[in-house]
Image (cartoon, rainbow, N blue to C red):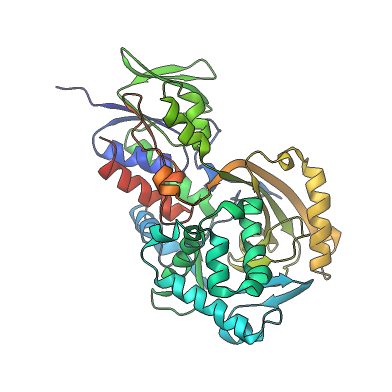
Length: 435
């Protein structure tokens, strides 16, 4: 009887976990390496003020068919809760609601013509199917053409800076198109209102069930195994870990960010390595706050004032019932920064002083004593920026090293980084590319 082909998956986030599951169910002998003490990657939970919830903010859309189908396989989709949410804008020191058409028409910072052009831009983007054409156009040029310079400066530029910092200057129009397309897809499900979903218990519950399924499929899980080297040898692909553990496989898939993958795989050809290193990444400082009081009831408040130290306010407890947090409110304050930003060196205390101080100004009813807990997650490589000509410069998944593949979120070409897209990427990769 022929031995099963041995596969190593490096990186235990949603993408790596899904690849491991699909390969195991295809009859492969699979080992999954994860450097942290738990699986999940960006979706992993942590403790905040005595409660377990997601380390970063996540939302499920009605249109997330791959994620919802996966949750159905786990027996969890029936437990999803759907909530009609509201959206806020903080601009010129004032909080505005932008949750329906009438509120949009009353939005003070823009004139009527600006609003018409803004609405037309969003509607037009939702109808575009040839995303590769938008990849050739800088996002600034495209937005000024369709929305006008005033709307760009008042709305679009602050929003782009909130997500990409100064890197918004190198992003293509396809970056914004992907965001608009996802939100419109949710509305095309039939409900013309903003319905978001969450899982009671958060991703801790999803990941717990997922890990059980991996164990049933005989996937070997190596936690706290930081991979430092991947090389092709006479016996296959040799994986060596920081803790001294080593193992050889027939095939290995690296799912971490491209600069990290390139660093641990010395056999890559020079041009191939440079393509991985040239991918521009955004990092994130994401603060979680447990508060005694709710803020304003908006799931997301977009911030257009440049001087605010964080780039949005995500009031998770306006979506997830406050019973999940003992009657308290959970809020995320993200700040997107370049992967090499010195802001990663700021201490939690420095960030708490800056973030909480500004939050108290934005919400005068809030007092310092209302802040029960404050934690910061730092991730240097979160989002690969869709730059001009991005897809034509992307290195292939199959590397120049025999038996080694690099598959990561940079390969999400016509979507935004989220759990649904990671599951879809894994399915497409197993079907089309791991050969």
